[in-house]
Image (tube, rainbow, N blue to C red):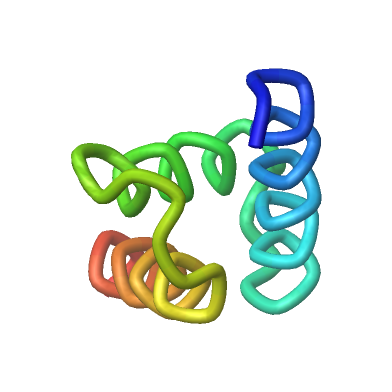
Length: 60
């Protein structure tokens, strides 16, 4: 997967996290980026789940 595809995928995951959590898009982007760090391409569902957990934990 090239850089452009990876960037598009990460943006789509961020949009999904925003829709599911109600968090602002910039916060969702940061949470998805944190969940993706050091994990290569990885499993998209796990990244979304981790981003949601991060946002929920910070909101509590």
